[in-house]
Structure formats: C-alpha cells, structure tokens
Length: 455
Figure 1 (cartoon, rainbow, N blue to C red):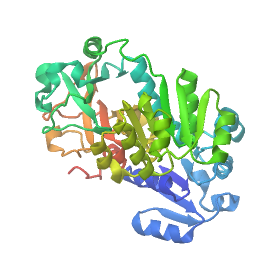
Figure 2 (figure 1 turned 120 degrees about the horizontal axis):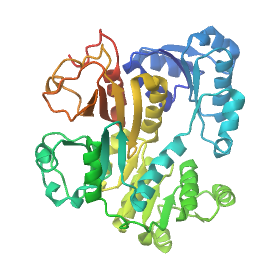
Figure 3 (figure 1 turned 60 degrees about the vertical axis):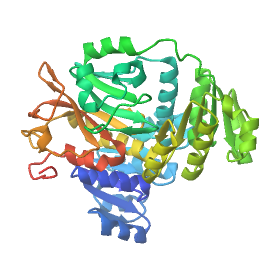
Figure 4 (figure 1 turned 180 degrees about the horizontal axis):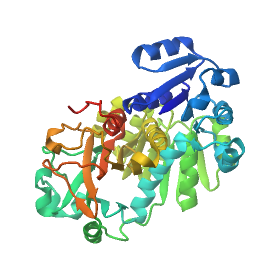
C-alpha cells in the first residue's frame, strides 16, 4: 500500500516507522530539507522537499497513485487544505490531524465540504481515554469488551482473593479456560509472563468464552460502590484540559482547571460552562492546598511539559488523591511513572498512531480494535496465509514480550491458547499489544511469505 505523509514531525515519523514495519511504501513530504536528509539516513522512505499546499508538488509524486495521504503539519488549516487538494487530485483516502476546538464543533460539515475521509484530534482522543477511565470506573459499567464468542473483562484482583499473590502460571487453577492478557499496575499496563505474580491492587484483564466471562463479571463487579465522582482538578488549560473539562462538566462533575496564562484563562472561562478556571501556577504547592487538592476525587495533569506533569502527579498522590492521571509524551518515562504510583499515564502520540494505523489497514486485516487504558490495544485479526506465525507452536515462535495472542476463533470453536497451540489459516485471533511497541505489532501483522521476523 502506498502512503504519503505530510509533515516530518513526531507523529509523522512515528506513523512512518510503524507503516514500514507493515511493509507499506511510504513517502514523506516536508519543507525542511535538512530534516528530510536526517530522516532518509535513518529509515527507508522516499522524501520530497516541497510545500504540499502547492498542487504541483502533489502532482509531482503522482498523488492519484497513493492509497492514503496523512497530513500532520503543525497547522490545522494547512492540513485540511492539503488533504482536500490530494483527494481532488485522486488520492484514495485522506487522514487529517486537527486540534482546534472550533474545527471540532463543525467536523462533519468540514468533512463533507472538503471530501475528507478521517479527522483525528490527538487531544480529543486522549480526553476520551481519560473520560472512559474515570466515568466508567465510577459509574461501574460491566467492563466487558466482546467480539463473537470471546469476551474480555477488567476487574481488580482484590475482588477475588484467591487470585492475590498467585503466579500467572497458576491462574487457570482458579479460573479454568481463561487467560490474564494484561495487568494495570501503578499506572502502567504490562503483558504478564510466567514469572509475574498477581498483586492485590492490580487491575486484571481476563479473556475467555463470553458466557463464562459474563458469569465472572457478576462475581467481581460490585454495583454502587463508585457512584460519586464529584470533584476533578485538571492541571493545564490546553486543548486536552479544555476537552476533558467540557466532557466531565456535561457528565455532572465539578471541575477546576488550573492554568497560569491569563489570556488562556479568559478563553477557557468564556468557552466552558460550569467549570471553575483558576489563574495560577500548578507547581505552587501552597496554591494547590488552598484550592483543596486533597479533597479531589481525581487529578489530571495535562500541562505542555512532561516533567511538570510527573511532578504534579506525584504531588497529587502524596496528598491522597485516589485517581491521578498524567499526560506524558516520552516513552522513556514509563518506568519512572510506574515507580511513582500514578494510576494511569497516557501518551497521545502512541494513541493517535494506533488509530491511524487501523484506518490504513481497514477491516480486511484488523476486524476490530479497542484501547486498554490508552497504553495497549486488543485487536481481532485474521490469520492470513503468509503470516509466519501459521503452522508452528506458539512456544516456538518467540513472540516479543509486548505481544500476546489471547484467544482464537476457529469456526464455532473458542480456543484459549497455550504454548502448544498452533495458529491455522483463517483463524480469527484476539491479539493484545502495547502501543509503545507498535512497530513490532505491525511486523507481526505483515502478510508476506518473504517475511522472517520470527524465524
């Protein structure tokens, strides 16, 4: 598949690397020649130094021969115009990154007018993940994700005391024909392996046959325990803070936004209803204490700086806030976050890259997908003839630790795999992978008889 990416920034490069793992032909267009020289020296892509707003630039690469164009420059209007030009010139489909809230309020009109297939908003996507975590937890939805006869259930380990301190290898002795596919521990989602032991405060993600999972759900979900999410403080009044405050306020939560820029505070106060906007420095501990930090049900740190977000998250935890969520863009901070005990850390770059990849792949390969706490993804995937995982025992494939085959649909049969399971052509696999290693996932899904990643 041919894919053009306009903008060689962080998102453009992350998507390009992942697409190359899936054996797509990628072209990157940018106006910065020096940047493109560095790109071409590191990855195998065609680079074009040009302004993609100029029709001649799009024609020069024969944009009508491309299956997808992805616009990821730093300007919304530029992204929209380039995508509209490309579509008019015959490009198959276009994906546009847009951030401005004003654009999002009229998104369908823009798509219809400019013939744009998909609009992705990183701040809105991360907001949706935070909102799901807070609201679903406190309203206590049943936590079940299902596809066909297979279902996945999320619950805390302490809800079933027999699981606490149990090695993963012994899990089936307590819950037969089920599998722990992920554990959320101290804000980090991990894929468990033989040496892991279930801890009391772990959130477990368990896969099994749908009826069995529904029966388990009745035992581990206590309705009515969390019904009072009332007060949330958001540190940082940027776009993520704006979107999240809007959604939580509509849900009925009392929201405070702490923002140091006066002009931004004015914008927030005039565009948000029933939200308290505080002009202050979120790193000022006395200020936070005066605003009753320790009485908050949840705190979200969403400033533009990872270091500030981590410091603020730690401060909130030390003041006894039950749920603390941090927006962190650097993957290298993952271990620090886990040691700090933050409840959830989200990387918008990983989330948006995953969404774009699923749009490019379409439904032929990935039938459905669902994010898990914004850090992992569970997908239903067809086993196609040229995947190298077909025909061998799972224990012999040496799958990366970031990937787990959780369940298999084979005709009317549901299989919870073990090391001796063999993947067959046309199996529908339920596969879980970490977003932080999304390039490896794309290599696994690559459909070519020449590919030898696992051999």
